[in-house]
Length: 447
Image 1 (tube, rainbow, N blue to C red):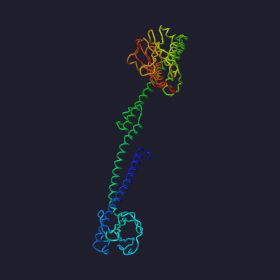
Image 2 (image 1 turned 60 degrees about the vertical axis):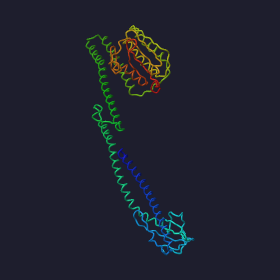
Image 3 (image 1 turned 90 degrees about the vertical axis):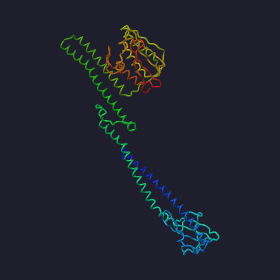
């Protein structure tokens, strides 16, 4: 019974057995009460009958053939005792008892008692006009004999109902388990490189249907992840191949003395540094996506951090004649400072490469729906609609791009800090990249 089908069937059968057992017990109790009450009423009627007989004649007229009654279509005989005031038996249908004293304790005028070691139903009435009492009784065993036909009919009805309910339960369990079995088979045959429509059954609004829909959604995410991985490997191969081919080509060019050694070594050094930078960023991005790393948090001043990042990029900005300034008031927050500083530096590097004449870093407290936001604006050409999301993808390089990994790393850092990195058009006419800390969220893993 380790399968769901077996457990459901076992639970269903146990529930049926308990229900049938309780029903039979209650039914037997009910029938017993009904029959006992009927027999009590019949015995009381026989006592009244005996009193009428004795009003017209003497005691010798009584005999047990007079006390017949019918219960559920069965003719039964009642026995009797005539008792005097001292409970001495002066007449009975069994002459052996005449003259003896009736010594059995009774609980009332009607009820159940034990006589000669057997349970009986009895009624005891005083005879009007005479100093006697009549005690009419019937063995309880005769009453039990009436159960046979009733119980047979009852058990047949309950047995038929039991098997009908069991059959319905088997059908229901089969219908419930069937989609689970199809889902199990579909998961067993699932391959992420093939369309999921070829595997999974169609979901519906039931719980199992919602489970199937969840598996379909999960398979789509797996397929998308696999496509991303394949694309990533292809892009990595392409991006790494370019500097490697340059290094390889200039090595042979130096050997063949096609280019001066100094020129060739400069190209090899540049391309090798580009290769090292690309590998470092790939490793960082892979670690950000795969490892739940703990980043220590501390209280930092966002305005001071932005000024430090701007100071670091100031020489490059001055070389291109770009004005770089930081605006906004001091704003204290708790965040993973090292990672946030890396994002600022990376965004400022991109801004310096793509701006025309000015860059503005703005610290904004109480940003709509957020605790705070940092905006990096430039007056460059901005991005087209197609580039707004593509720019955050790996190896996407626009004009003046380097590895195409910087913004992908920045967005992943933002995600790990429970923040958002977005692109919008800048008031300066170019691009605006905003690092937004939504309200009520932590500022980094473990922070």
